[in-house]
Length: 555
Image 1 (cartoon, rainbow, N blue to C red):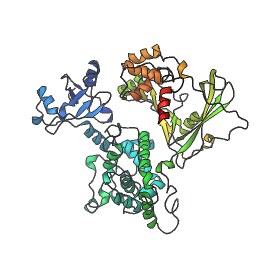
Image 2 (image 1 turned 45 degrees about the vertical axis):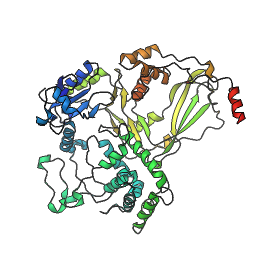
Image 3 (image 1 turned 30 degrees about the vertical axis):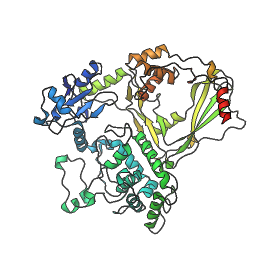
């Protein structure tokens, strides 16, 4: 390796970084990461040699609980130990964040057009892009989704989209904010108003062909460069505020857009609770929006249909799960309120690739540049797989015997806007989470009537509620030795592995593995494990303590 070299600050080992050539970055041999793994994963802190200067350097931690950029207040001292004078050093390479920004700026957008067609630049209200702040595409996509919803536009911007001024509702929320940087309503209003109005929309004569290289792109004319339309929308305050206090969204790492959307809706719901009361800030903003309403009918009424409800209600729906006992024929219905419908990729249409086939596909791509066509599946097929009947193991509360049951899911209610998430992740044979590379075809219209929950059959018997097993008679839980051995073989803490078996009731190694991935950061993950009764609690006493009862009676 001649570039992209990283120094391990604990051992002094110098090795290549991760290979970033796939997105236009430097090549790498992964030597620094391999050294971290070969030394028992004890020394995670590395620094990129080419970025060392008096101003600092790029540091990275391979530790599983960090796995991202970090800071070192004693960096100069640690570098001096290895004979490096940071104050006399000059930066010769770009940081990973700078390389990502360059890659985004140089990306050939025409390559993603269908059939190789060239994309046509557009301008106007609702067509304003967002600056990539570094791994912020998940946030930008969520912001565009929210701003595109008419009711959210009315609540946080106003009724006049085709105008350069800030909307009446947005102006009211910003001006009434106790502290602008700490107000979720105000920051949402600023972002939604910027995306829905024409204030930052580029004039048609200022649009730049995205196929042009960055160096060949013309500068904006002087009369345009002085206007708001020459500015860019970079939601830094929005990102900081909504990520504050969150273990993942407060970091500069890439995140899941669906999880972030639910997080934003939850944060807004808490902030809107008081603001929706009579005389509250959202009620006042609604009045300000009504005051600027143009003559004639307005889409969705003079303001919005959600005037007294939190924004998340636009997406809320009730799911109904039905379990039909195969022994007694009785049924059980379980309702649940959701904001998003999660769909999987049908395994019978797109089988999960094995590691050998995946490695061969990568080898062919590197050898001759050929690429295996990606599998395709229709969204209607994903919905049909979600709604299909599933046979599950089931202990009947009617007979008390183990058997099977038929499980189905339906929509009991339908929201104004249905959010769909396609789950592409799976666990490989080497127990690694991987993403299924598949294209999902989305039709312009979709019939969801088959997903609607129908009336319950006349005379249908319902299953009795499960009777809790007596805690006193429960035996101490014992982790399955086979499952425990597989988890320990992967290097996880023994106490955490036992807790995984306990939490999943020895359901299998895969279920225990998923539990470990989700709870590795728990404070008690590696604390000594103590066997408890299978019911999870000590057996209750036969009755109340007579002495305590007498003491309470004396009061």
